[in-house]
Length: 175
Image (cartoon, rainbow, N blue to C red; front, side, top):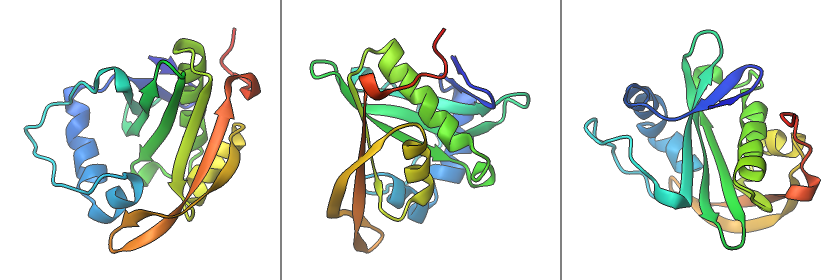
């Protein structure tokens, strides 16, 4: 479990799956914009799942209430080159509260301090101002635009590529 000021990143438990499935996975437009894979309906009976060594999936929970805020993950973890991609998805009711930046900080702490990564990167739609602000707010640098690289609900969209190196990271959770 990783503790921030307002939120916690913790292992996903079975009861989280229904909330996340209903509010994040079932919304075709939202999920299509946040995932490079095509949307497919998730079955209620699908297990939480083990993503193996290539990803680390967390539930984002609010301090005090314990309510599920969303999900966060490092994916495409490459242990040889020591790099990983970062992704977050917050439930609509929890957006705009500053949780995104804190989730990015905790994922960076996990990636750099716990996993020993040397590079973390974010690919997000160019119009995703909230994710770009959360990432740049903790030190990610805009490295480029991947023109028309994402098929999202009927049209191609540009993605922004942001990167952060271990030596650039200022860890607010360091001892």
